[in-house]
Amino acid sequence: MITNFSLILSPALSPIFPYLEAGPWKFGPFTVHFFGFLVALGVLTASYFIQRRAFKLELNTVYSSEMTMWGIIGVFIGAHLFEIILYQPEKIVQDPLILLRIWEGIASFGGLIGLVIAVFIYTRYRKLNFIRWFDLIVWGGIHGWILGRTGCSFAHDHPGYFTDSWFSVKWPVNHVDQYYNIHNYPGRHDLGLYELLYTFIILGVFYLFNRKGDKFAGFNIALLFVLYAPVRFAMDFLRTADKTYFLLTPAQYASIIMFAVGITIFIFKSPLLNKNKEK
Image (tube, rainbow, N blue to C red; front, side, top):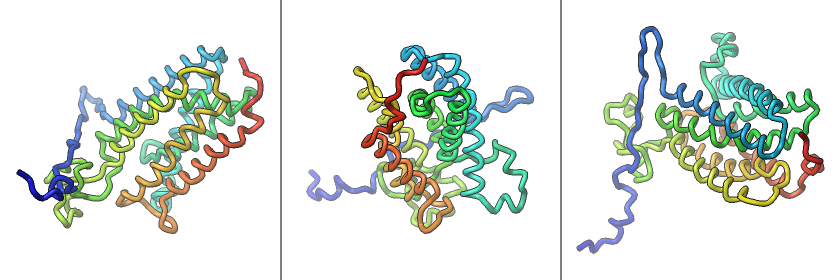
């Protein structure tokens, strides 16, 4: 019989998440990385849900297809530039051409900024309502995001502090990063995995609030921004190596702006949100 109740609540239990690994796989001269595979699958998944929703809302599916392609390009360019310029600026001095090698370093918030810019340019070009059409992109994007973050959880590219908390990943004892585990903790916070788990919650809320009834254009934008920003802001305090400016990471500043935009859309419902539906 356990008489010490504190033992039951102790955080120093075995981490509940295993350290996931997969790949890479070689096929002759080609190497397939699991992260890259899942990102590609995520892009296809997002595209499918964008087209499906465009058809349901009776929007022009040719436009939604074109906009998706513009958005994909914007995501990869924005993700790379945000990462290099704000997180690794020293690399620009060493090799300015790194700005052109978009496969060397990405940041999710930069991808979002690039997406916003690309969709804005496209909707201006086609004379479409930016808010309505970006709302469409958000709906599809949250589905693809799950696969992207699954890739992060296998790549372990967002490591946090070592911890004795049960809510953590059991870090391999032979991992090179154990050098920093000065307290010999059994687990480590894995922000990619945490965000993956939280994205399932966000997606569930999306389906819950989109079950029936017409929502104002921009509803999904506001919902995503309000749900995601505070959690991302908090999780960034668990990161170990991210560059900070006045104690906050670039993503945390972006989270503040994101949350403010989401609240603004919900409160004011800008006149742009209430224009007649475009075809």
